[in-house]
Image (cartoon, rainbow, N blue to C red; front, side, top):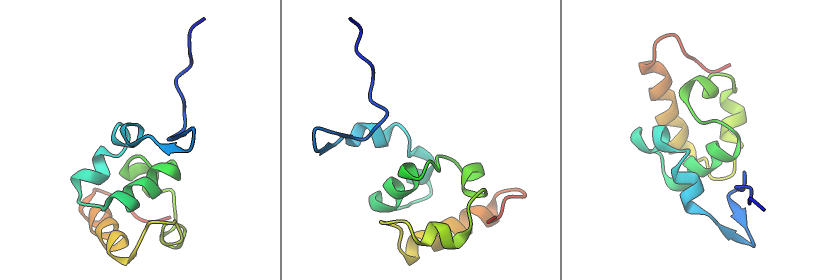
Length: 86
């Protein structure tokens, strides 16, 4: 019987960091901390386009996202062409 891959980063009470590293590359490239990257991935925000579908206040409320992370995201959106907070 074929096993299904988990769509979750937590298995048996342990965090699967490889699961995150497969999904957070864009956030790693712009310099976000690991907690901020995990917060975005957990919220389903995997690219700048996904980020533009969220409000700044929604992102600020994520566990692991601090003021520094939000400033980095502000800069990334400003550098992008045509993207902004919802």
